[in-house]
Length: 215
Image (tube, rainbow, N blue to C red; front, side, top):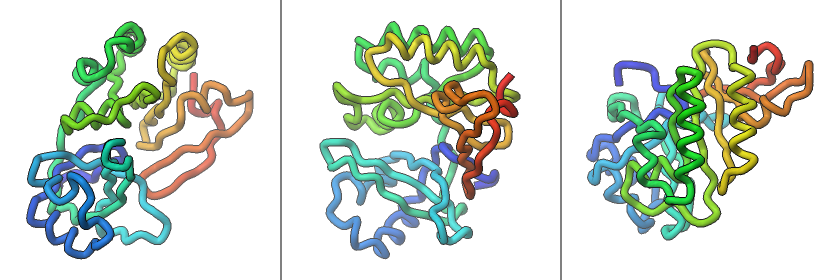
């Protein structure tokens, strides 16, 4: 990979490198879908580094669908064994969502357009859209990423809270800050004046004052 990967980026693994990695992971032997994951062209997601994890490799995640145990697999591969994969935005992923979600998705897309933002899914909707496997169920949440090029608009947070109040699913997810950090939108919206929120980055977590992040 030419560029430094960020949390939530999607990547595809070279099948030979994938097979070599699996040979060192007997704990993954026999798990559904895993052996052919790279060969079948299914992506991985860049995750946060675990404490003490080797920094020379790209930290990756692979969540299995509920029918395969819903296990979240953590692994790592060299950057040269990976290539970027374009992640679908919410409009592109929407056809994979339950029909009952459609009014909420339309409201979220309108909220994003009103703030000149491109919202994209992660979690179950993302994986269902990019793998063709079934991840969504009757109790699934909708996890979204809201990349903000500057301070987070209070009107965006208020709009999310308003949509969440009547949505048929729970709205989760993060606002992505200009420095690459991510903060849960609900935590940021509900933070008291002068309060702090947890911001996650690829290699660290930190507490930051909420009023320094919003406008």
